[in-house]
Image 1: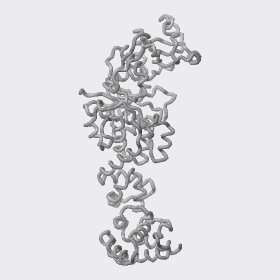
Image 2: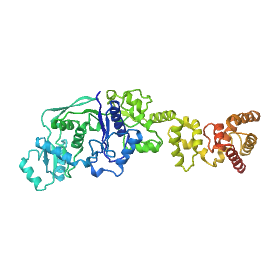
Image 3: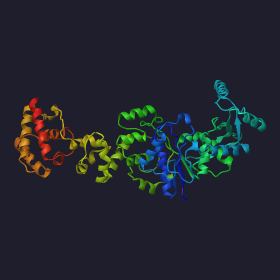
Image 4: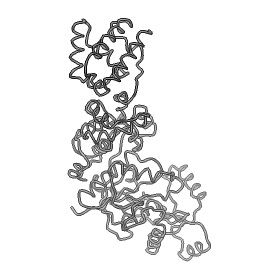
Length: 491
């Protein structure tokens, strides 16, 4: 396959979400596998809906995911600029080409006139569409009105007879009667282009070979191929991806579904995923398999995806969002990270809790907590006690099952006596000594070690007890046990 030039072309009108990330991922994989280039283009012509900071969030999100683009608004490239608002003259020039060919025309209809027509069509139960008022204006009349400064748009002159056959790589030929198609606006009254013109022009000018985009553009697909053919250009390979369904599998994912997901520690927005402790490796592995016909449990790195990817393996079948699969892939990739890599990723989660992290200690606890992590921020629940001077166990948690506070205090004192008499509390020394006490006392391991766990870590669930005590250290562990005895004696 020849080197592919692909692009991710989002509008900066909101957060980068899962659908956009998957589109960018597939475009990236195809470009890299074929030795081509992957571009970022910002389609910001809908000025009213543009959100401050959204472009930077897109850039940051792609970099976090590891989808480094070869050309883009912040790094430039051969076909700069890569923001559509900075390419206005290019679109004006191409619109004039279409008008000179008789494939576009100026439209002077006011928004009020268009709205009135739409309402009348709706009353007649017709599909709202442009009624062609300006379609057959004499060229000299149109030029005079433009020269007089009359506000106008530029519309595409769609063929009204015959059919349009548009070929999608996943769905095959899509045939549409031209009489169902509309004379869509190409240049708005403010001089900026609509997506329909700008994207087609930019894809041609930037030599894009494969247009990978969401299925929401299937409705405009016939228009887009007509625009390209009107210019006489070669068409790119079109790939319209499968739609995402809500976790139930019924209907498209909505804002309400996203809000529900947030309650469970999930999100469809990339920035949220990062803050929630998901890894880019887990996220792209999960996203890749929703629409790619490979085994659903395939664990792959980005480089492995590049090796295996093929647009022939993509499927148009809707994909239900399964957050449990995200948890699975995220946890699996966490297991694959080296100790040094995982330690570097976990450290920010500890420090944002106000903890001072010793790097040596952090690397020691990785083997103890790695298997317990689903997301990176889980490290706080399992490992914060390692970096605290003291812990504050709940009094009721210190009372061993089947014992009262007084008896629990006696058990704690015996444990303190045993541990104080040891030269070291590394697990190889402390565990045999305390197990001997358990056997002699007639108490269960759960009673003794459970009490000791809460006293040492401040929590009922923790990494392995004796290995944890060894890392916490002799002095600090004994001090925590003394504190537990004081708490029990006050109950």
